[in-house]
Amino acid sequence: MARIGILTGGGDCPGLNAVIRAVVRSGVREHGYSLVGFRNGWAGVLEGNQFDLTIQNTAGILPRGGTILGTSRTNPFSGEVADGAAQIRESLAETGVDALIAIGGEDTLGVALRLSQEGIGVVGVPKTIDNDLAQTDFTFGFHTAVQIATDAIDRLHTTAESHHRVIVLEVMGRHAGWIALYSGMAGGADAILVPERPFDIEEVCDRLRRRHAGGRTFSIVVVAEGAQPAGGELAGRQATDAFGHVRLGGIAVELERELEQRTGFETRMTILGHVQRGGTPTAYDRVLATRFGVAAMEAAVHGRFGQMVALQGSEIELVELERALAEPKLLDPALYETAEIFFG
Ligand code: F6P
Picture 1 (spheres, rainbow, N blue to C red):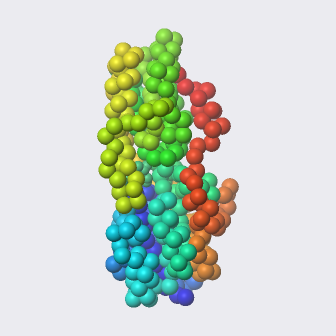
Picture 2: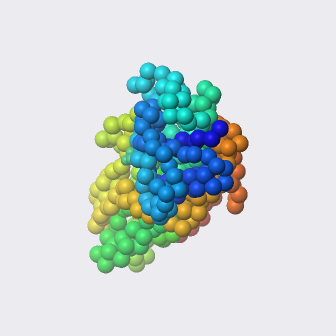
Picture 3: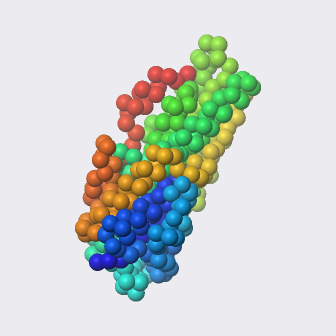
């Protein structure tokens, strides 16, 4: 085997290019392999839309955000594609690619798992700013997103304080509130609302009332986009993607209204959105992404298919994709309880 294909799927994330660079450099220099980049996630693999990746054309991409390969949420098993696995097998044969390195989150890696069960060689690299993939302590991109969200909280603090307002900051986090919890702790938030713990709006209000009764004139509330009020569904969340995920975003709008109406405190909200996924990765993410890329290439060379590289403690290990995807990695309750000590 001497030719490996790389793809990036799902939402983009700072550090994708660092993984690509590391796969290419270690593949060429350490193993004498050639590398091919498929454009736009599984769409490019289905279509055979690819180009050669070399040390030259991947030079200088280490600090660049996004992905030079492009990405998409195309799902070869969504039903829209006649026989996804057969099409991919054919496309790999045509391009002379022996195996794939798939860089993605639960959806992209879910496809990688199915393909490896059908005998197509795929190694996974865990990517998501949400940090909700199991079996790895951290995914790359998370650290960068937390830093961006923390910077935002710091900035919101000064304006909230000046205007004596409550400010609600909405961050990403579909199943898990990792970004909300880490940035909320780092930024000194007065309440952190996460998907793992449905919130009681009156309790949140009480917390703010107590804080303001104690002499503070402003508060910061951080909410993950996937947070839900206890016993209640939110309206206006209809659109779904090829993996069936509802498009989230907007809970801060409702919180702004509710908190102001119930407490009488002037409230504003900010939705950080895709700012969290853009721009250059932190040094931590560059190093993690580089280590993941080197380990994924090594795994591909040794035919460790159906597996994913993972950070466990300070080591990079290989884990079964099946185990990593069995369920999302939710917040550690003890960490949330530590954050709670500082609320309100
Ligand atoms: O990468 C995961 C994620 O950041 C989720 O938190 C969020 O719901 C989703 O991406 C939004 O991505 P897009 O707008 O690209 O569909």
